[in-house]
Image 1 (cartoon, chains in turn purple, red):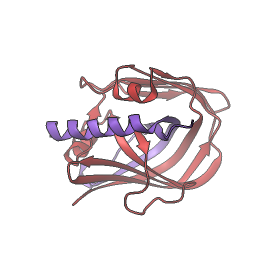
Image 2 (spheres, chains in turn blue, cyan):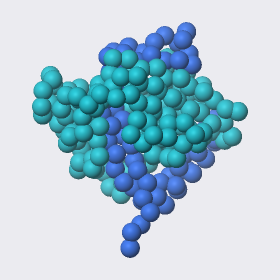
Image 3 (cartoon, rainbow over the protein chains, first blue to last red):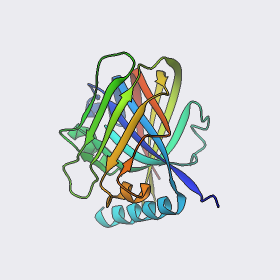
Image 4 (cartoon, chains in turn red, cyan):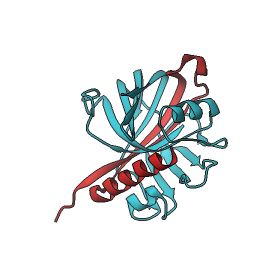
Length: 61
Length: 166
């Protein structure tokens, strides 16, 4: 039986400069290198974690 | 900066080409820029400051050692690590990365446009985090031995625009 899957994305971005707060809501990144990794995770678990994250944010916000 | 999310369908009909764009729901976000963390938090993104955030690789060439250590100052935000080997990117394209976050009825979108980016697809990198963390629960343990799909990217500049609606 194939379980429903979602995809986890992990990103690490190195950049020597982010633009000043004056430019907000725009942010400039220069001379960047990044790694992006993608791995499958069970969809049911992902949905449950997402719900908990949203609830947690509302409580703390 | 370093972030973790889940790939989602585009909520607003942008970034639809899977070869040149992506939409992700933000689970964690860390940066060593205090102003950026503060601005993103004001926009509803759970961005945390990580003064010691380290992302390093050895000089250009094949089999470069790659390392990332993410350990935000705030308790409850998971620490995580990447380690492995990467190569110098050489496949040129453009890319649009949308990262989303829902905060009650407020929807935050961080859209990063990259006009010129080089990719390599042959990295061999492992991921490690706490088994008890949000991400550990997702992966069912504390380690991904090697990502089945990965991208090593390099680009001269990019612009991220953050919008909140409604």
